[in-house]
Length: 293
Length: 328
Image 1 (cartoon, chains in turn red, blue):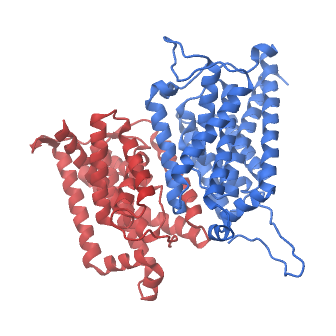
Image 2 (cartoon, chains in turn red, blue; image 1 turned 60 degrees about the horizontal axis):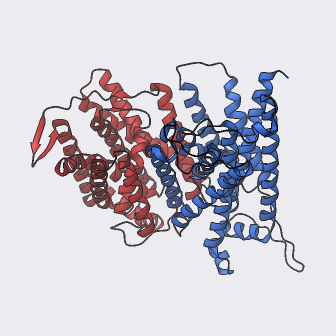
C-alpha cells in the first residue's frame, strides 16, 4: 500500500510541480499573489475539453490549453493587474483584486458549462508495473511532460538572456531597470511562461483526475501555493522540491487517514511553513517587497 | 400589507441587521486596524453552531442529527455563548496568524484557516452534523411569547435592531476613544505606532477578538431566526461579499459599513431574486457572483474609499501649521 501511495504521490507531484513552478516564477518576479491562478488552470482545461470534443487528439488539447493559459495570463496582467498597480494598488488591495478576478472567472465558467462535472475523456492506456508501483501510460506521459517542461525552464532561466533578466528583476526590479533590463517586457515574459505552465498543469490535472468541474483548479490552488511557499517564493527548484513533498504527503495522508483530510494536510503544511520559515527552504532572506508592474 | 409581504420584509430586515453587525465587526478588523481577515465567516459560523447546539437540547441517540455538547439554555444565553465562541476562535486564529508576516501572506493564512474549518466541519459529522448541517433549532421565546407566526417575526426584527444598537454604541465608544486612535495608528504606520510605545500585536489582537465576538453574535442571531445552519452557507466566498460591502460602503466608517451591508448582501443579492428566472439552474447564482466580483473591482478602481469615506481627522495645535492625517 505504501509503495502504491508513493506512485500516486509521484504523479500528483508531477502535476503540482508544473503548477507550482509556474506560480512561483510569476510571484517571484512581480510579487502579485495571483489567486486567480487556479481558475486559469480550469479555463485551460475547458479549452482542452472543447478541442477534444471538436475531434482533436487529446495531446493537442494540452498544447492548446497551455497556449491559452499563456495568452490569457499576459492579457490579465496587461489589462487588469498592471493598471490597478499603476493606480496605486498595493499588496493589500491586489489580494482583493485577484480574489475578485478568481470569483468572476470561476463563475463565468460555471455559467458557460453548468455546475456538473464533465469528463476529461482521456483513455488511461495500458498499465505499466514499475518497481512495485502501477502507472497508466497517460500518467507516465504526464510525468514525462512535466520533466521536459521543467528541464526546458531550467535551461531558459540558466542560459538565456531572458532568464538572466528575469532573475535580476525578481531580486531587485529597480536595480535591474537601472542596469538597462527592460523590466516591463521581462514581466510580460514571466506572465507568459507562468501562464504556459499554468495551462499545461490545468490540462494535466484533469487528465489525471478523469473528470472536473468549474472549481477543480481553485481547489488545487492551495496545495500549489503550499508547494511554492515551501520551496521559497521565486525559487523554481524549491517549488519542484516543495511539490514532491506536498504531493507525497497528501497522497500518503489520503491512504492512511480519511481521504478528505488530503487537503487539510497541504493546508497545514502551508500554515506551518508560513509561520516558521516564510522565506521557504531555499531563499535566504524574507523579502518585504512591493508589487511590480 | 399582505401576510406574504409582511413575512418577507421581516425576514429581509433580520438579514439586514445580521449583515450590518457582520460588516461592523469586519470593519473594526479591516477598516480600523488593517487586518485582511479572509476567514471572517468562520467566526460568524462558530457563533451560529454554538448557539444552535445550546438551544437544541441534549443530543439523544437515534436522533436524525448528531452534534456535540447539546444543552437547552434560556434565551439570551445562547447568543452570548455564540459571541464568546466567535471571540475564542478568533483568539486561537489570531495567535496563529497575527504575526509579522507580509500582508498578502497573512491574508493567505486567513484564507487557508477558512478552508480548513470548512473541511473539518464537513468531514467530522459528529461535530455539527457534517454537510447536512443542523436544523429544527427552536426559536427563542416563541412558546413564552405566544405570538402569531408573523408577529413573532416582527418581534425578532425588534430584537435584532436592539442588538445592533448595542453593538453600534459599543463600537462608537471604541473607535472614538484613544483605543480607536491607536488602532488607526497601527493600520497607517506600524513602525511609527511601535516607536511611540504602542503594543502593535496586542492592539491587533484586541481588535481581532472584538471583531470575532461581533461575528459570533451575528451568527447566533441569524441561526436562532432561520433555525438551520450548514457548511454550504459559510464558504470563504461569503467573506468576500462582506469585503465588497465594506469597499462599496466605505471602510473605517460605521455608517459606510452599514450602507454597504444594505446595498450589497441585502439590496443586490435579495433584489435580484425578483428578476425573472432564466437559463439552467445555477446560472443566476453564477452571474450574481460575477456581479459581486465586478462590483469590488469597479469600486477599487473608481471609488477606493467607498461611498461614505473615512472622516478626515484633523488635529489643530496652537502655534503649529495645520496638519492632516492623510493616508500614507
